[in-house]
Each structure stands twice: as structure tokens, then as C-alpha cells.
Length: 64
Image (cartoon, rainbow, N blue to C red; front, top):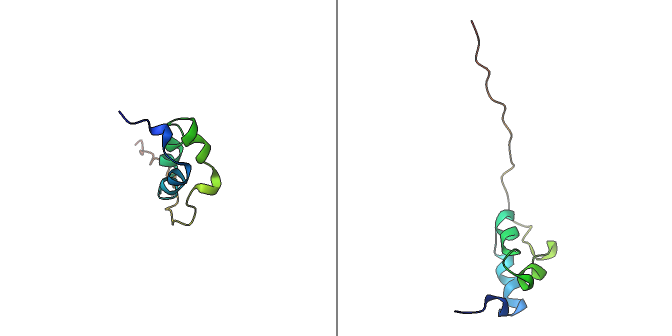
């Protein structure tokens, strides 16, 4: 079984910069201490276009 904590840091940075979703990036940092040390704001790809998160209210039913 490979030891994933032994991956070179420059390779981890390259992998982290390929992640598109912040959720994936946060999970990336939870793998182990070495991965967490690479999961910084400067290593996340902020240049990607993202859809805005919308919060829609539920429609109320008319009680007649």
C-alpha cells in the first residue's frame, strides 16, 4: 500500500491547483498533515468561473 503522505509537495500543489470546487479542496486538506500544509488559499485556483449560490424561498400555499 503506498504512503500518500510521502508525495512531494510540488506535486501536491499542482494537484491542489487543479481542483475546481472549494469542497474538494477542503477535503484535499483533510487527508493528512502534509496535504493540509499545502491546502492554503494561495494554492487554490481562484481564476475559475463559479456559479453563484442562490437561496430561493419556498412558495407558500394559498389557504382558501
